[in-house]
Image: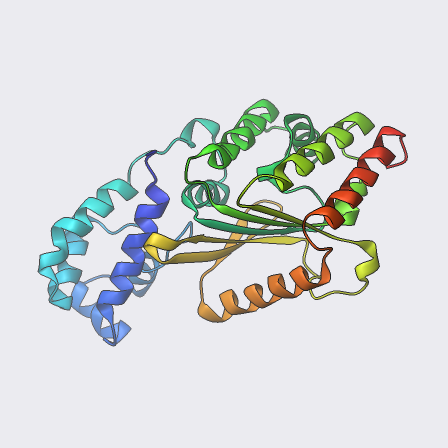
Length: 284
């Protein structure tokens, strides 16, 4: 298995928050001889979190009466400090965190209204998107390689259950040439017929819907570690949501989108085939 420091940091943060239990935050800060900001970051999973030093970790476990957990949590801490497979690509921090979670996810639910989700993009489509949106000083080839590397998750023997909801407008929008778009739609048709992958299109005829104010979001879960997060990509960085209220809200949104979409299978493929023909005729 590839090293996954994001997963290790996520687990460590969750463990530290669990071990603190009902103890008052301010009292733990004082006893640990640290700052409130530091303790908060140690308990925050993801790219906004931080990894405590060995001495600080040991002090926390003494306060919590959990010294027997030291060896295990020190091992997690060591893993959280290691480089990962994304280091050569120079990814922005939140994107790197996202890629690490995605690589170990057991389920991924993806809604996109403007572009085809990255996990399902062809190389030509990905290049056209990246060339149009990336900062001028960025390395397009490296970004394309990273996106293609991310798709390795779909080739794993135990790949995640993947549910894609894509708005019809994203499929009609011409990105690159007409042939690039036709090939991209063909790729989606192929994916829709693979086991464990569900693809639905939100058609124009759906009208007003629950996610009209959202460009897109992803719900990812790693079941064996009890991790679930919602990720929303921004222009320069992304945001992760892990609060139970946020997870419930986005789960509700995704379920309502499912109901508004075309049924999976033949209804979806019929529309995809029609869109692919339109692109081949240059109609978009």
